[in-house]
Length: 597
Image (cartoon, rainbow, N blue to C red; front, top):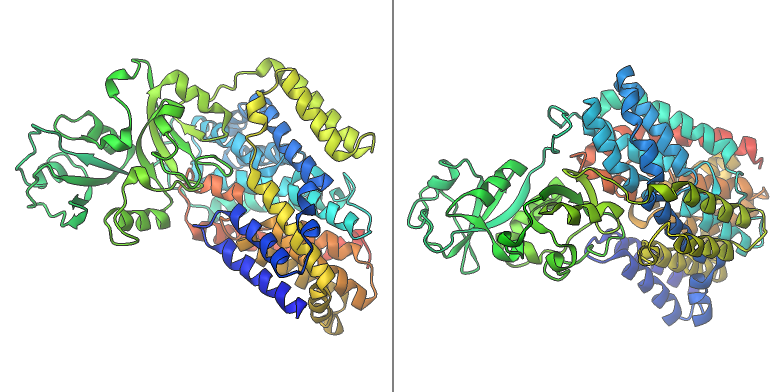
């Protein structure tokens, strides 16, 4: 009965993680609550994952990487990438992927992607390389680099802690390198060779001042005395070249036909490029809706900037609307328009027209990871977005991290903290906390930024450790392990290894890498016991496979580049499928060679 309950909780977790409207941290805590309520785990067991030494270290590691970003360590290297463009497009992408993978081998891959994103866009513009040919390789390089060392991704750290909790040897700092490094090299070469053939080219001239081609949504109204009052909609759509996709009057959608007479009581839902939206703002007789702007244009400083900024994973804006977040009061910038990736953009238009989930206003729509805002405001306020914690600036503002003088000190403190934890001079949690506090004390980062990490990762890891423990104590892991071990009768342990890795890759799409690895680990341990072989190759195979989620854009690093690169879901499938299959083949051969059965 207990096994059935745990498997049901796993199924519920899979469903919850696929529902975008439910925050991932809420889904994680629901899993913990269910395990405690059903009696599978005691309250102490259910919550002990949050006090785990490794979970605390992951928090401090995320905080320290903020210090590296704040001092411009990543950007100082990235700004020199355009040099390689003189040797050709593929050389430029190769150099970028190598640099990103090196950083990602010791820094969280999501943080690395976010830090390199504005740099890569600027370098691509200067090098006249289409951004859609650059940003997906950027995300893939950060994921590949995370497979080299223990600290490259939180998945490695979590699996190391889980193995130690099960009474096995934790993963060493460089233990993954004999396989992770060749896999990263092969992955980078595959992307460099196949990228030009399989990746789209969806940007324009590639000049330094170019804005990424994307359609924005905004709302406009006709003010009192507008010269368009009593005129047909054709005066705006045809005469001004604006694309009005709908009219809303008294909360009801009205036909946006050219002959529709405008009375001034309606809202105009406008879709268009950045230039189209700015033309609306500057026209006399039509203006951006006040509750979207949330600011008096007259109060804006003459030295204004126009920027495109994406919502990154972990941003405090995720799940909150512009109104709810008090956007202009907090950031001092005007939100002119919103862009979402194509599938969400279509749903959003239906929402705004009242055809799904009731009529909504743009300023009241909850923001999601990957949304891009077109912002206008004082240049100094735009510069404050450079920390990348709430929004990642994509274009329009030259990213200038303010603390370059502290870069070397930040690197030294970061490496000292890792060394102290790796060599058992200090416990991991104490080493990480010491490094974080040292960065704050020396001015490498602001104290407030240290606590503005992606708490969803911490909550997810703590919750999934509870689920992994439940699979172990309930016997669910043993039950599934027996089923998987039966595959060994047909092809031996190597067949079981392939099955476990493929299961991890499939689960990593809806559940996240860490969650998938922790769910599969008990299955792998019990499968090894049933086969009478060493569990190490199975555990390492699952750990590395969790970082091979290249087929969908659901990995946080891929989400970050989805909008800026103007990608479609099929772009990831087209390049990610051969890359994933090749790496699974490499892992199938290499893992048992380094860690024999």
